[in-house]
Amino acid sequence: MYNQRMHALGNEPSAIRELFAYGLARKAEIGSDKVFDFSLGNPSIPAPAAVGRAIADIAELPPQDVHGYTPAQGLPAARDAIARVLNRRHATSYGPDDLYLTCGAAASLSICIAALANPGDEFIVISPYFPEYRVWIEHAGCSCIEVPARADDFQLDVPAIAGAITGRTAGVIVNSPNNPVGSVYPKGDLEALADELRMAQKRTGRDVYLLADEPYREIVYDGLEVPWVPSIYENTLVCYSYSKSLSLPGERIGYILVPPAVACARDVYAAIAGAGRALGFVCAPALLQRVIERCADEPSDVEAYRKNRNALYAGLTALGYECVEPQGAFYLWVRALEDDAEAFALRARAHELLIVPSDSFGAKGWVRIGYCVAPEVIAGSMSAFAELMAEYRG
Image 1 (spheres, one colour):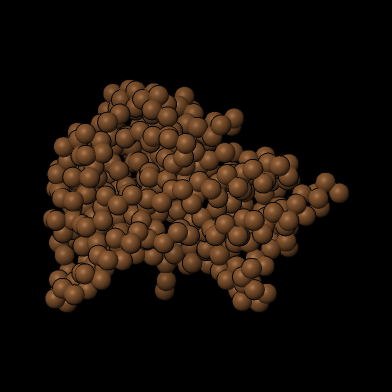
Image 2 (cartoon, rainbow, N blue to C red):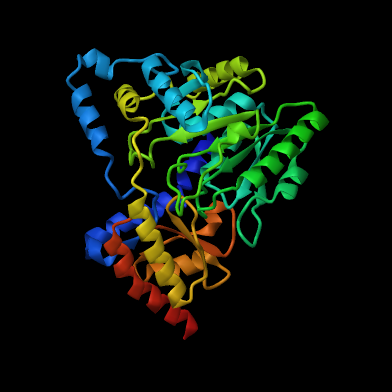
């Protein structure tokens, strides 16, 4: 017999992935230039040239060095390279033993959740949120507690988060820059949240962790800086992926940072190593670990995304759509033209516009439009968005 819950998850695939698969089939039917696919956060710009050179150089090494197992927590040289980059950027003093290399941010988060909580515990998420958070939390036998972001600007509602903390709260997940809205949480709000978490720890007598999910850290606009959360709250674990910063989503490489300031840091690190083992993440891909050893400090090409953001935001607002201007990441959050976002997204599909309804993210009445696409996709879509608006107005 099979596991009924896993069967249910398999029969209820991700709405985002399902829409992406539909788009591939539709492009094969009518031509890719006629389908405007904004479904997936798949970087449209190539990886930096240094990544390609590193892969070519590493491929010349003895096969065992390229494809063999590494230590479970990752190659010491790769972890040392990441620590040096973090120390230079954030004036910290991390070492390689503070880092655990993973198969991307999904592995990082699922490992941290499994490491920190016991069945029956709770994790707080800020809605709208990346839908897989709930899957990983519930798989650990915990409850996913949704706290809506502020309705006017989609920033942290700190009093609401504080009010949701109970004696069962193991952690709070913050994702900044945010998927799906593109919000960047300011330092002042994070400091206020840190104060609430410290008071909650005293009140409940247990550690409450902040999980900083940061795959979009480098993708920000207009000179904005993303606060370094571990410098604000001691019990912070950082979950990172190079999927977006280096345009490597299919390579599945990232890390967990356990700063020394975390309470019982070495025990937490051991629990993370144990959770990685239990979940089957024996070691991150060896080839990519060696790539990161060489490319951890490569800059991201944000300019292409900035141009796309400006073009899409200006075009849709000129047509009358209500949009939240993104501060980071590469998604535009747009109010649906009816209360039912899924119905709106379905009507958009009739115009070959593939957009994700907000129901997938724990919110109502909005859609996410991913603008990590070729510029001509945005330019070509404007007439379709205009027809969609006219259809509702008419």
